[in-house]
Length: 106
Image (cartoon, rainbow, N blue to C red; front, side, top):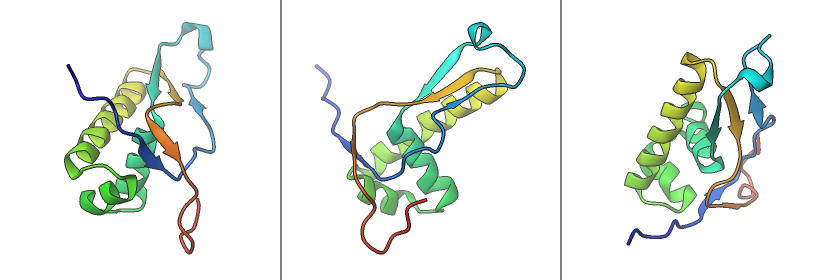
């Protein structure tokens, strides 16, 4: 029996929840779903340049779990870009929170 997912703390919401290749009808595209915790991990690692230990603490997960989430996010993003798939951002085992006082919400 596998362990149940723990909620991951997410403070960022995407400005857009759907991306697709230009000039290709949606009905002709395969779709890749990026969960909100994967979106948050990408933001922390790539845009905010946080190390895995710090980002994991903010998301309330272990460093290993953060690394697994980030790896999954990168794989899904690459799959969508390389294979011309639509990318949908939604769901996942998350707890949506506002950023702590003093931290800018982007």
